Amino acid sequence: MNRAPGLIAQVRGLLATGAEVYAGTAAEARIRQAGERLDEPLRVAVAGKLKAGKSTLLNALLGEELAPTDAGESTRLVTWYRHGQNYRATIHLAGGERVGAAFRRDAGPFEVDLGGHTSEEVDHVVVECPSARLEALTLIDTPGIASLSRGTSARTLSFLAPSEDDGEETPADAVLYLLRHLHEADVAVLEAFHDDDLAQATPVNAIGILSRADEVGAGRLDAMHSARAIAARYRRDPRLRRLCQTVVPVAGLVAEAAATLTEDEYRALARLAEAPRPERDALTLSADRFANAQTSLALTPIDRAHLLARLGLFGIRLSASLIRLGAAPSTGRLAAELAQRSGLEELRRVLQSQFSARAELLKARSALAAVTALVRQAPVAGAERLVAQAEQVQAGAHALAEMRMLHQLRSGAIDLDGDAADAERLLGAEDTSMLGRLGLGADASEEEVRAALLARLDRWQRRAEHPLSPQPVVDAARVLVRTTEGLLAEAASSKG
Ligand SMILES: Nc1nc2c(ncn2[C@@H]2O[C@H](COP(=O)(O)OP(=O)(O)O)[C@@H](O)[C@H]2O)c(=O)[nH]1
Ligand SMILES: [Mg+2]
Image 1 (cartoon, rainbow, N blue to C red):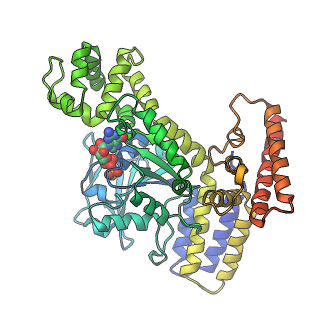
Image 2: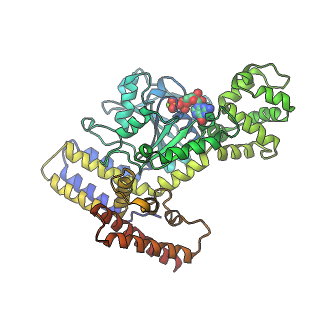
Image 3: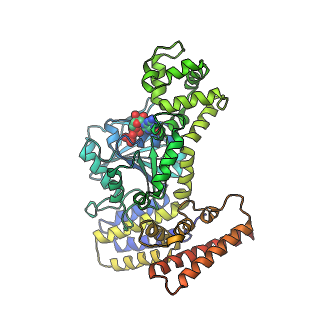
């Protein structure tokens, strides 16, 4: 459900004031853009170091091979993939000018022709596609951080965490941050856009992804199992807890192949699955063997190189095993099994509960950030009125208070000792549904839900009123009381 009722309306009111205050100035357009953005799909950026698997994951989420992968001119650009009636590409130049761009797409990724512009002159490229997946989310591919060229790296950083001099709030409402191994550079980057400031990503709007998860166990069939254990460890790492709300393992390559698997590929995998065990084992011992060993199987070196590029060794082994066990008797069934095992389905679930269910809230937050940034950079007469109204909107929206509280708990600014995990869950850290907030299973009865809510209400009322509770704890407890009261009202209305 929309937990920010009225918030969007209030933000629109704020922007109307903004339009009056900035009427006739150069900043007027920014107010208009902030308003238009409220009606658009949520913008989710995919970030991480070069070769973390960003473009591959983006394709998997789209279910289509659109973003070019591996090195190449276009992977150095920030590229937006947004919904449109037809395929179309537009170059947004650094100076603000927009130019239509020619593009090529022969059954593969979308290659935009920069038409003589260098990548340095381009701020970002917008690719429109008629994909139903993009109706709810606009996906933004970013160049690698700490990549070969310093310019590219700087561009990604200023995109994710613009400094005040850049004069703009970040264009993304939420971020998927890919990391392969917990690396100091990753943490530094996450910290760069982690700030109390509204404009920055916080644990509330960033999801960590342990990417290329299939490579964790050198392609062994239990790779995803190991990856889940590592992701669980990352989730507990205090540095990461302050920066993103959760970490999920995803094998993007397998997920992308699952989304676009062809009959020919299935037949090639079936030939491998049906081969006698010694031959099969010998061939799939390593990627090198698979590519180069002699074999009597009807798989040419070209077939094998193709399968490796599409699925990786883990994906090939897993597919062969699923086909052999009878779990994947058709292309469609194999695709479904691979999507499930790649971690993509779980990521979609997390995206739904953390981003889509909060879309209005995250967009309202971006609009507030835009107004705050504008007032700071372009102070004009009458701006106090705008600031006061922005403060009013922020103070009045309980959903924003929950978000701030979650952020403070995560960053260690408030210590609720033994009740911390319960508080975070109640604020929707793991799952924003009623049952998720209470940590109850799908089979919980109405009575159980009500009992759980009353127990929470009692706990947080006591802490709010306890004479020895320090002020930050009292503040947190009050937010939690209000959250619980809201959930009780919701439970009562869904019953009646
Ligand atoms: N084994 C494996 N390889 C992957 C995965 N994701 C990406 N790759 C490969 O890693 C390379 C870089 O991927 P890419 O998506 O371009 O990374 P980006 O630079 O972060 O956009 C490509 O060769 C991909 O095929 C994955 O989940 N598993
Ligand atoms: Mg890329």
